[in-house]
Length: 270
Image (cartoon, rainbow, N blue to C red; front, side, top):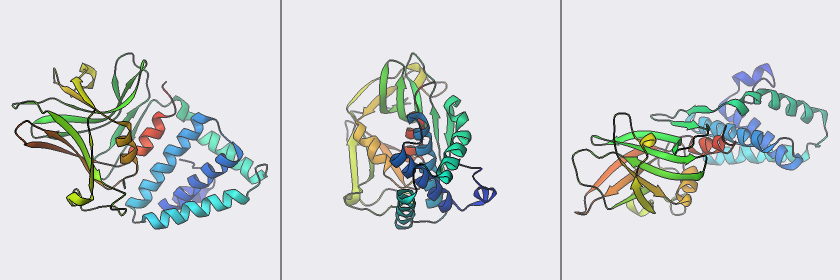
């Protein structure tokens, strides 16, 4: 997305693209090159580049070293240098359309996130991934509106069973297991952490899957969104609905470019 800096940039490896974006962000932190909206767009692009590099085979250690090299280069580049001013102009040109972009897709290996910055008076999905649990559609992501803050939520329309008494998000516990778990399932129980929903209410119709007339909206704490942002994009997490008899209905989601989607939303509503 920085793009067009040189003809070679279009063919750069994913790790090289991550280096470019990390350098520009570090230079911006030091020199104040861009307005907040453009900084948010750059942050989204950096997260996307990091995810692409991981999917291409890079690991966390390599990308940490890449980011460190980018910060080191930015640290010795004079803020008033001609080269940095050239980069600044090219970035502003490359991202000029982002300020008017209301919707973006962030594809993953098996599932992706849909982001929407448009301003609506009623609650809508700002960032969403959809799946099912059995025959019941489940939507998960960030819900917001013009007059309400963004919240992490899961909306489910049940079909043919009782209603759960609780819901939780289950993922790898990075404090216990710092390395990504890439087996397409959850890690062992001792390496997991859970975030329980803070409440439940009837879902607004705009949040329901197509063809559904009603559903439940379970709201989760902000800490859960921050923890999801720290997962490897190739990892999965589950939303689990717990019933009175002890049974559990699970829906599986891909972490993907969730942090990139959040950064895109941080550009503000349109």
